[in-house]
Image (cartoon, rainbow, N blue to C red; front, side, top):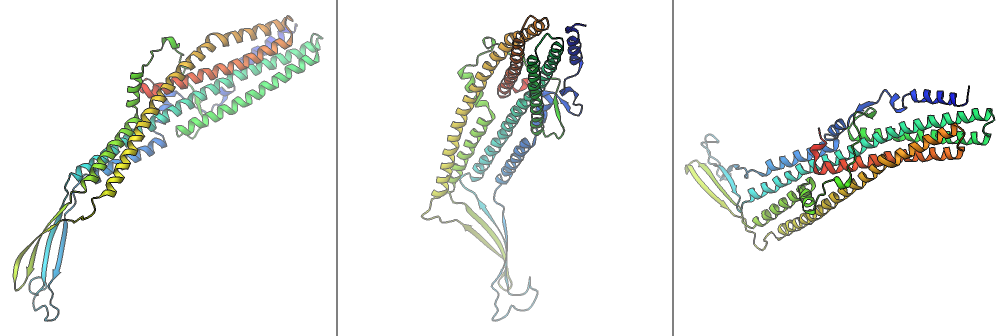
Length: 426
C-alpha cells in the first residue's frame, strides 16, 4: 500500500466527523429574528418603559385644578359667662361655621404644567424607542459574533484534522525513508498550534453565546442557526444617501425626538415660572350658626398673596437655565446623530468592499493554493516548508474572511436598524 492511500483514508474519516460545535446538543438554536424579538423586550427596555409609565402618571398629576378645601370652625365660645343650656349643635352659644375655599389659578398655570409633563412623557416614549434600537444593535452584533465564532470553530477544526493527517503522513514517510524526522517534528508542531487555535475558537464561541444570552435575557446556552450571512452589496451599487436625506434621518431618530421633547418641556416650564407672577386668587364662602343672634349667617372670603418685592426671579432664572441646557443638549444630539449616521454608512460601505474582496478573491485563492500544495507534497513535488506556509496562510485567511463577513453583517444591520428597522424586525 502506498503512502498516499492511508492519508486519503484518514482525511475521509476526518471529514465524515461533524464539526465540534455541532456536537453541542444542549445549546438552544436561535435565528436572528428570535434574538432581535427577545432583545426588544429585555430588562433595559423594561426599565425605560417603567420610566415612561411614571412620566404618564405625572401628566395625570399635573392636569387638574386645585382641590376645594372644606373648613369646619367653632368660635365665639364665652368661657367666662358659660355657653348656656341646650344642645351643643343647636342651643349653646357657639359660633359654628362650615365653609369651602377654592383657589383660582391664573396665567394658564394648569395648562403649562400639563404641557411640560406631556412633553416629558413624549421624551420618555422616545427614550424607550432609542433604548430598543440600542439593544437591537447590541443583540444583532452579538448574534453575528456568535455566528462568526461558530464558523471559526468549524473551520479551525477542519484545519486541525488536515494538519493532524499531514503529521501522520509525515510519520509514514519517515518510516519509509522518504522524509526526515525534523520534517515530521515540524508537522507535529504545526498540528499542536492548530489545536491551540481550536481551543481558543471554542472559548470565543462560548463567550459570544454568553453575551447574546445576556442581551436576550436567556439562561441556557444559545447557538446561532437558521440565519445566513447577508450578501455584501458593492459600494458602487449602493444608493448613496445625500446630506439632506441624512439630516432628515437624523431628525427622525428617537434620541433627537427625545431631546426635542425635552426642549418643549423646558419651554413650558419657563412659561409656567413666568405665570407665577400672576397671583392666584382663593375664593371662599361659609355658613355660620350662632344661637341667639342668627342661625343663617354667611361669610364670603377673598385671598390674594402679596408678593411685594419678589417677582419669582429665582424660579424664572432656573427655568431659563434648564431651557438653555435642553437646547444645547438638542443641538449636540442632532450633531452626534448626523455624525453617527455618516459613520454607520461609511462603515457599511467599507465593510462591504472588504467582505467582497475576501469572498470573491482572497479566500478562494488561499484554499486553492493550500489544496495544490498538499497534493504536490503527497506526490513529492513540493517541500514541507511550502505546505506549512500554505496552511498557515489559509488558516489566517479563513479567520480574516469570517471577520470581514461579520463586520459587514454588523455594520449593515446597525445601519438598517437606524434607517429601515422594518427590514430586519419580525
